[in-house]
Image (tube, rainbow, N blue to C red; front, side, top):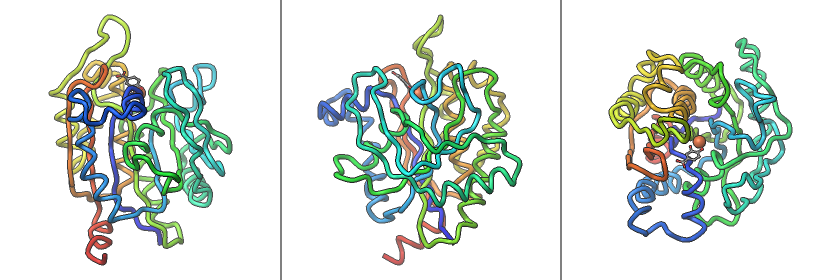
Length: 288
Ligand code: DHB
Ligand code: FE
């Protein structure tokens, strides 16, 4: 059966992609954020996952307000990035993990999640920025992708509880996939930020710390707030924590924290990176 290794939770601020394009990783503004990826690079180098299942939110590139699925699972052969208006270079296509994607889709529908399945799907900065951070400068992306988009944009939003349940159902699907491939999970977005309106620039380090402390050992603690509570606590885009909650569910029951980095601000965002691993990853590291 396929093994879940754990994975990476990270902010996906588009300006990070701009900093990468201009080679500013060592610049004093950017360095405290990029330094948080050194342990991630070491971990990926030793684990070499085959597939990345990525929980993220689309920001109007593939889905807009006229057609907004609550949960959308990609089942494409490959995923194209496109210009979203942030002035970022367009990334090369990402290969899809189609067999696993259909296995996840079948499992989720059997578990009564009414998902949208997408055989054609554009991916935006919420996937490309975390990929560039994880595998800087690669010629070919070293993993195949299963993208899972969660609506964090148009009300009504899914509840944190439902997102955690979705992630847990994805973990069950991966664990029942008859394959010797290894799977890492990513959750992108957050932490606290609000880009527009009266509270533009709002950040909440106390709530962010609560999330960072609880998400590994006790993810259910994050479901005590409703989606609207989280918008009050973390800002209207801080609700992207839903992607982290689902991703944590997809890592399985127990994870160990390998590293975390928290830095305020990157652009308008309290930027964070966290690496969590499962016992399966520890076995891979011991066998190497
Ligand atoms: C910013 C953060 C985001 O999550 C996003 O999707 C776009 C912009 C920002 O802080 O600039
Ligand atoms: Fe975002």
